[in-house]
Length: 468
Image (cartoon, rainbow, N blue to C red):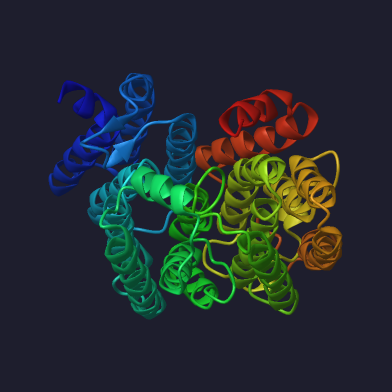
């Protein structure tokens, strides 16, 4: 039992911190103090992680399992939430009266993601994902007096209910076939028999559909633009990186890598879905005149690049998760830049002349957009290069060509935003003020984008160990 408690100690710390923040919010603590408490909770959770990772390989009778992949992803979610908290502190979008509830839900969502990625049982996976979904619906509709935020929460709920229903039905089929929901037992029995019954294929498709919703993979991406558009900027930024990364991590946990559920047909299906996802995402973003929706469809296209890595074997897994780590910094930075430069307007015209009105903010935004486009020597270029290399070495030449072609398409709409900031005449000469917390987030993200682009070896070495 001691080992079990130590394993979930980071999640316990986050839950305790969330409850403490909620109580402090009731007693009228200021937003900056609540944000600081959230950062302290995330930092403490990080420091107790090594204790959780060094315990037994499983906890709570196999419901949770500890391995290098799960340990790394738990760190990933903590870092992503730290960036989201910094953006929430630097972007004025809520009353102090609601700040306690907001940071409470953000920490609970992080704890749910950490539990989900450590799940060794499909029922534990479902419960964690469902709890995350409930919290996400609240966050999307957090601005109760904003009709668009309310609409975003409702749409997210409707699409999310459908996806989780599909996943749960698939899980029930798996239980009917194997008599267990433990992933290790399912893999062992399936590897021994090597038989993929039609019912099992149907179950796998349903579970895949539920997880593809979180990762915003086509055709389960319909909710993305409307939900991101209506949700508050910090929430949209958080959704674009953390739950999306969870979707990919769970796909790897259940279907890829050493999983026996890795049917011989999955790589080809995944490659086709990757091409559809990146193409539909980029073509949809190309015609947007709303920056938030542009970045939303861009995130769908980026999901296609990550999925392309998953389709190409072990080297592709390393490339995909290198891309995902870089993506959290460049996409969070892009959302943060757009929010801080124009807090109240999302149309492209609002960003005219930002190179003059907020030169540092525009410079950061430009760096993130160029990294998303894949311009060297920024880390986004290396991430795309690794995915293309993995596709070529796996003899998926058509997939590599699709990544290159879509990168060219994306380059144009990213450049459109940069052109408006630097070459169009500003509607106002008033300078745009960005808070210190906002600049701190932008600086951290930009340093990661440049640093990993110039010196990626330590991160690649870690990924090589995780996916050895």
